[in-house]
Image 1: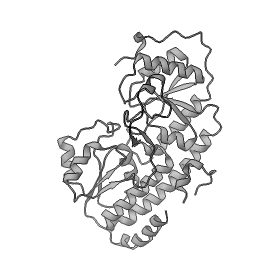
Image 2: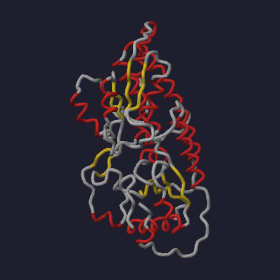
Image 3: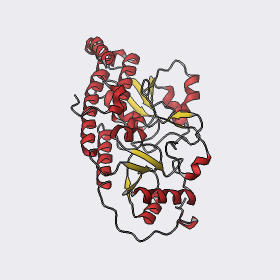
Image 4: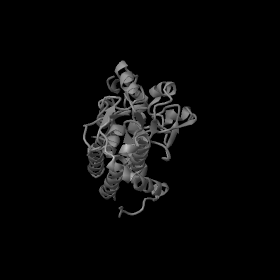
Amino acid sequence: MRHFSALLLVVTALSARATTSSFTIVASFYPVYIATKNVTRDAPGVDLRSLAPPTTGCLHDYQLTPADILLLERADVLVLNGAGMEPMLASWIKQHPHLPVIDSSEGIPLIMQSSLHAHLTCHHPLPHEQEHPCHHPVPNPHYWLSVTRHMRQVENIAMGLAAADPLRAAYYLTNAASYVATLRHLRCELRRILADLPQRELITMHDAFPYFAQEFGFTIIAVIQSEPGQAPSARRLAELAQLIRAKGLRAIFAEPQYSDAPARTLARETGAAVAMLDPIVTGPDDLDAYCAAMRRNAQTLRTSLTTPLPALSPPPHISKSLSPNPADTCAADPTNACFAK
């Protein structure tokens, strides 16, 4: 933070040299785009584009299109999420070494997970998963769902843009400082909403929420899909249903970007509710989109985890026929000690 503040002071004098020249910034996908939109707010001559459309979701299976190549070729700087989120860009970046690339994950502590299933953390395997030991760890790329890490991500974007485009550096750094203050207040608000909940173990659709869970004191005990969009087997559903009953879970958390059919199947068998947690990989083109989505997630958790379970008769066994169709005043958080400023 000291380096960030010092750089802001150094470049403030450049604000007098307002420029009308065009500067094209390409952000890889939605959460990076929204963060960069806040950093570049009101900067003259900036043309901010998202490489992947805002309806794409995560980029794990994304393939570059001819239109993407044309956009990249006229970019002045490329902003990445990093942490393995954009494998489709590795070859293109290697072939274009003169394009400035900002890896916004730089210096951010990342949660490591199994490379066997890039979306399945090995911390709480179901019985059949124990047959497959965790392979070498790779980073979970969904770190923006930690507000604290997202604050660092915003600063990384601002400092990278300031280096690539010194004439607008004062805009980038001033905007980032303002947005980080907003995020700090958001973190306080979410901590208040999520405090003192009676249940803090979660089952989510896929492994997008470990950073959120770590930041706000939850534990992800299982995920429904080992890969986004891949239907779980009847065996997996049966094991998940047993786990839900054993833990007395009130809710199962699906995601708006994917079918909730597997979660609905589990809900029918266990009586748990189905609620939506948004990983913020799609959404509106609004400066406040990230904050609004995080507030919705917190309210969803509070409502879902305080609603009593309905009384159920003994549930039937899940068979194959049940498979789904294809300035911070908050108390210090010890999990965020590495971010102390």
